[in-house]
Amino acid sequence: MAGLKASWLCAAVLLVGCDVVTSACGEDLSEEPAVAYSEGAVVDETYRSSSWDSESWLDFPPGLVIEFEHQLDAEPRLVQVYVAASREDGVLVQASGEEAEIVAVDSDMIAVRNPSCADLYVVVTAQ
Image: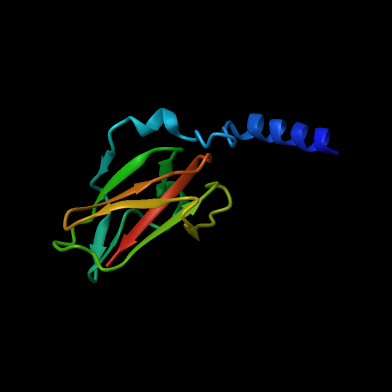
């Protein structure tokens, strides 16, 4: 039984391209500078990085940090991050710490990192 579990773990590691033993997911991008994103819009004092249409969601590969320039003229009091695993199903979910980390927030930008092993898509909102 232990051999079967070990084989399953090795197969899972190969399938997702993630080092689950040492948590090295996204390490290839961890040394890269953050990517600035200045698109998005503010409507009724709420910033949204893109539309809800799946074609406009941003690519969010493992380890990447995106700095969303929110245009709110003040530090947001509320930030929400939504992620999707696929554009095809058109389903966004509110991200957890396993899918997105808010690493910085100030009066100009919101920095969000993908700490997971998965290639995701992201939409950020702020008020």
